[in-house]
Image (tube, rainbow, N blue to C red; front, side, top):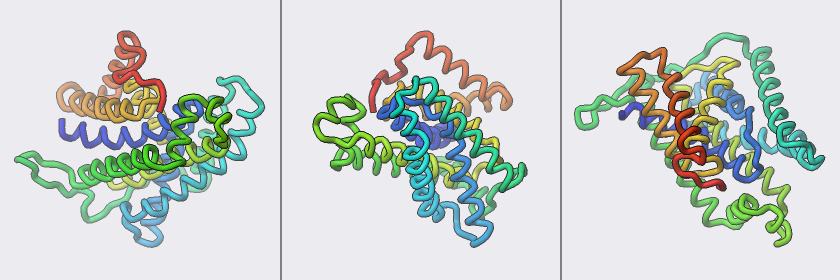
Length: 283
């Protein structure tokens, strides 16, 4: 249970970026996992070349993915949206971006698996007689810290108010003088930065290779649907739910079937509560 909750915190952080993008732009970003992959490679090469700790690499991976999100949204995605292309074309565009990023990583970084070994990679702490992985505990704390900062940004700043307004009614927001194009760029960039942060947090406990993005795009989509499309709170609930289900399944059923159990929960929610566990439909 503890392991599942700690992993679920990271799942929630990844899905929060996808939720934010969907809530404002109504697009499921199928390149989301590839952005995570880019964040993981940024962390890995910073550690390999300059010995920068994965947690310190957050100060570089977050702005790097923010800038990548700005460029992709401004010059690739936004022109397609302005051309009023069908929604499925916009989704396929993000899938194409994911393919490009995957193959760039394959060319530049090789298909090898890489990981980061730090003095604390295998460290554990005892919490009420329960052995807890220290990196996973730190990842959980940082994930919820970043989630809290995002909440304050969205709820307490003018830009955050504009993001909520565009998510609720983009036409009305435009009539009120909000630059919706600028807001969509900022939103996409923030969503990309969040998953870039998750990439750095994953490196001490996971490995990176060019095709890893497909795995986490799928997990992020499952979490978003579990919680409710466009719901920030739903991302937290869905992430924790998926993490616990996978952890319990790996411990009591089979390590090889843990991903399958996540799909089972996903299908059951679609059948019996298609609006998601929380059900809110906007960010």
